[in-house]
Length: 283
Image (cartoon, rainbow, N blue to C red):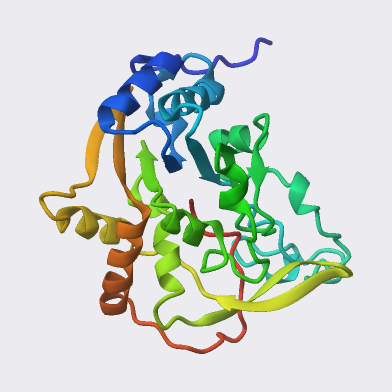
């Protein structure tokens, strides 16, 4: 019996050249550093898939530019803390502590085909955090990912703070503000609750206390950020293929999020009991 056929591709034909040209039209500059969040399916009929998209972005950035993507692996955590979904209770124990940690260097990126494509790109660098790593390709790749502390998921000792200092910009390519990882850096700069997080250690799983991070209401935050931008510094908007694209500075997004979250999100500085780790924030 023949296998069911896949639905035919829809949308415009998108090539490596299309991506590069339309990103330049959006305002991407040669030599800059971009933190990119992409929905591949939103672009249309992409000839060459994720590889062509990455090549097109690198073409727009040129040899002196740097492409950075989140390569998060929320499942690289102690299964005893999983809640969404929980570990099955078969076998007599819900903790699953006999499961040995995977080496962060080899863990697959669980947030889409393009991040995994960047992670495995020739010359790519990856930060050391076991759950919220970033991968980078280009002139400043090693500088961006260096020193990512294993007890600081998305804070001052993560690539997000380095990107802010390097005047990097965020590219949302068919992705919404709910994927904007930069907003998480603001959570480290306002009073925030703490959680217990399971991570790989030298002798198996270990637990550390970390700042709680959540992408709840990031869509609303992004809408207000875009609306309130000064006339001289708007969020740049355009299209790449069929996808809406946005371009804005990391530093501006973080500064606005600090003010917005302090007003719109009620936070208490305490460790929830029992703390439960979901499989990573959306990116």
